[in-house]
Amino acid sequence: MKPIERAEVQHAINSFATSNVYLHLETTNGAYATHNDESFFSAGAYIRNAFIKYEHGKIVGDGPYRVGLKLEIGWVYGEGLTHYEIDDQGRLLLAGLDFTGKLAVAMQISPSPFE
View 1 (cartoon, rainbow, N blue to C red):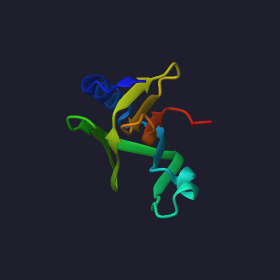
View 2: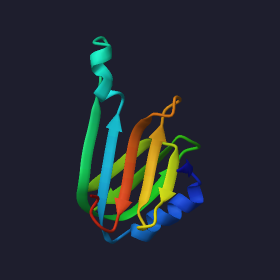
View 3: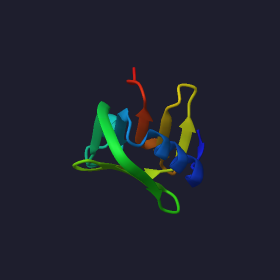
């Protein structure tokens, strides 16, 4: 993955608009490591292969970035995004890495289900 280039990510977001796509969205602040520090409050969210169609989407910010997708009945967004990749399957993979390089948020859009 490489640091986000807004124009390239926006182009990829636009390419999926008005199509049926699969969404993966995940946040974590250390949920798998809370056993090491019981005073640390851990929270996260996870959804995989949500079948959506968005009207339009936009990347905003100066970094870390936020990507919002406008659905017919609302919005979905990922915040804190720092890196991206368009893989060999044509999927847009976005990640937000914290200051130590650990994953804090992932947002991925694909024309086919994630395995």
